[in-house]
Amino acid sequence: MKIGRGVVAGGKIVPFASEDGQSFFAYDPDTRAVGGALEIERIAAPVIPGKIVAVGLNYRDHAREMALEIPGEPILFMKPSTGVIGPGETILYPAQSSRVDYEAELAVVIGRACKSVDAASARDCILGYACFNDVTARDLQAKDGQWTRAKSFDTFAPMGPWIVTDLDDPHDLAVTARLNGEIRQSSNTANLIFSVFDLVEFISHVMTLDPGDVIATGTPSGVGPMERGDIVEIEIEGIGVLKNAVG
Image: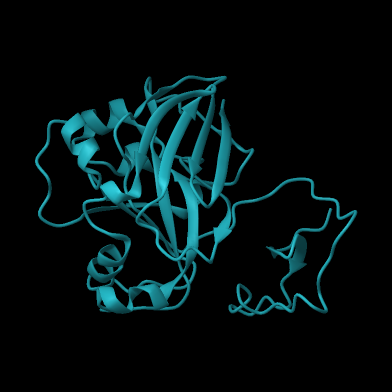
């Protein structure tokens, strides 16, 4: 089985022309397009980030749900790249936890290095957007009093199904989580407390964002537990559906 990267363009699978660090942009849809009987065994995660910068409590409805005050500035935490899995892969329930939750989120994928940019320039730093599930061992989060262990298990960062690069406005997109076909989260990125571009500004004044890095922008109300054997789907308008089993 060959493994490669590509884009969907004009109804065809288009392989990247290079793997030189600029491969997200280096393709020629006229001469390198592959159509017809291309065998795809599975779609992997669209990027393995150097770092995942996640944002806590960034939806007004989630803040109300948790009975917490609206934060005055973004609350940041990190998730390791070893947690990343793609669509169709299995979220593994860790033995240390008795409650593992789904959290539907919009992921922002950085396209070029940016440091100390302002919100007006943030769009130029963004490659595109994907669905993200900020899987959380909720009992361990409460036990530890901080979030690192609860957010960092292998498979706790499902992302995909691909990166959409042509979203003009990420701030009016329906965000939905379904558990075994039942809607559990239903909101809109219009409810974000801090916008995508404000987040890029804030984070880039803390740390350099490199190409391929991911910002997970926070989850709306309706977070809840998953059990082994469940199927969780994260759907974001204009992007697609990220579907994973829990095992």
